[in-house]
Image (cartoon, rainbow, N blue to C red):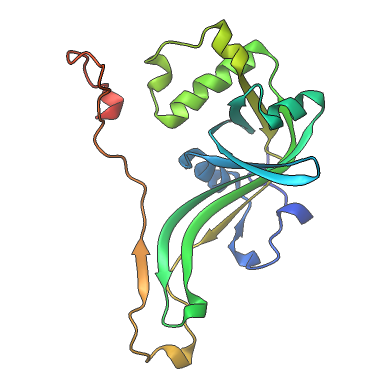
Length: 214
């Protein structure tokens, strides 16, 4: 397998092409770190974008949803054209000039035809991976879904063929003539961090906190 995805007209940025990345390691790392994705598709001639949970197994992106939702129903009829994006914000870039304010970020865009996962084993594997994407170790530390819950849950699969990452990193890009202006300039780092776990009100006080939540 190639170490990089091949750029296509749909995965080549029209601006800041130098920020594009196509190596699989970068793309996979961003997809795996992001906790949610945004699924875009067309319904009745209009664009729809939905935030949802995803996970990656190899070169397939799995997207969690309800079996009665619009994209899941559409995907049952045929391969549904979709665009899936994830974004991680790493910093606020504050420049001297308003025009040069920006953000440091890492993002991935994947396009293609999504399919509904019908195979029970593949669906079970994907849902197991979704739980572990939320928190590694969680899938084996909860009650598995029963038949009714599985029927109410749908999973979309998108093969990672047309994919690109885009990264903005570094500092301020002010014009030379603005460097002496009396305004603070620099980067404010931004990180997503988990706080201390808060037990459910009905949780037995004797229930130990799992090691993966400490």
